Length: 354
Image (cartoon, rainbow, N blue to C red; front, side, top):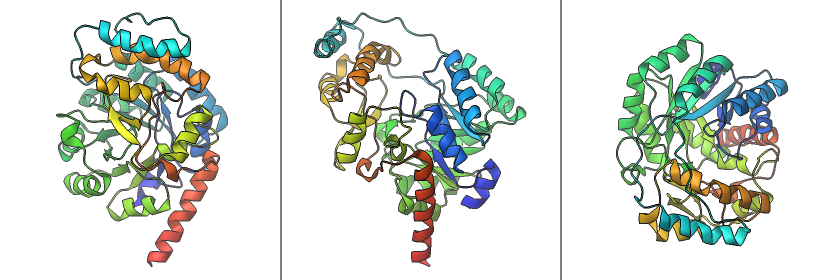
């Protein structure tokens, strides 16, 4: 099944590098993964159109292999606190530690999705993947007409069926172990915290299109397990965060490698949307004042100066340390070397199992 999926994508190995919007994934990582036979991904949700064009050009300058672009789909978000003053005061305390001026209330950014989709049609990657919602059937049709394959993220069987009805080519089944933002768009994320082991086979049985397993997969054992569950491919994010090409600070990488299995939590604190990351000072502070958190994208914009300064200073108490539930299984390798290691490990596991 994985060999068939890889042929369909035009890649050698059914391993997808998860699109980590922000500094996690870089053009160097995307290109290295694709050049090694996997599918590299550009996390484009926060990129300006100019920055996206530059990243696409850099990836294509490094490899001629297929790659993906990932976006946040248009979906409703829960309302946040009506009064921003308490949250700005909370953020101000963390600004002071970083030597920043107190934060001001940012304006609400316009929804960039329509312009981003037009840009994707211009750049024509092999794949457009998306999360936190659905694209319209008309948009899916436009992408297909341009020769772009589409993959939507589901955290429940109901979401997978809804995505299939729009015409997507494949489903990314995001288990509750996954790091970063939850892809839930039907109902509450709390009701959709289904582990990868339970979620993938149920989605495989519910839809007639390929399924990609995501969440907690860090090595060859996880890849073979996903294959056994019926997945055509795996999508791995945290595993690539500690690679040479990752854009995160070395202190963040060290925190991942040394983290315990119980070190992560789901939080709204950094963006206003639920996401899994390592517990740190701001996550704990924000969650203690959950009723003061603003809605997405306002909370995300309000915390951006803090997060950017923390990234420059290597202050891991004020960074969004996105991580899945098995961070200590990460390796300090180049991204291409990691792909090759994963392929070899999976082959060894298959051989051992006979």
